[in-house]
Length: 157
Image (cartoon, rainbow, N blue to C red; front, side, top):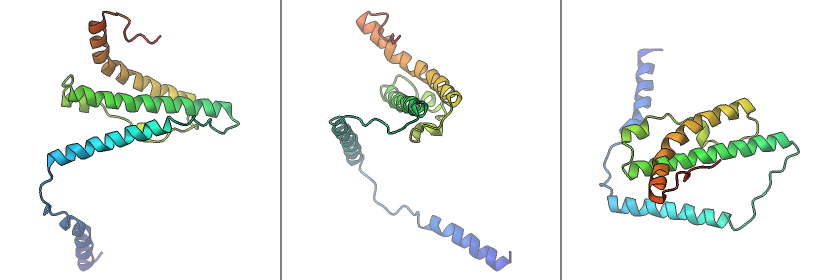
């Protein structure tokens, strides 16, 4: 590549960075807190709306595919719930930011469920998720046992 062409390419690559100047006024934390709370309420209300109609059964002739889809949905749902729990433990100062960031959360958690996964893939995901669930639920289960006196507070057998 010729020197002039290289210079133009470098300039065009860096041009978007020049548009990232911080000329905006400071954002009010109180407004951000209110807006974030509104999003949470909107999601809660929408979820309640979804609960007003019966769930549709998947339209499939392959019973194994339907079972794999259900298993994958359950794993992803549990993973998202344990992420929410992790955030609450952090907010309640029961774990540190360092502890909260120590886990690498796999990308599959944020992807939609799929019916094409093999039983081995599902089992591997279950094994990984079980480790995270056991570690993070221990905090709430201990509190539940201490407050209720029920040693089987978190027993789900």
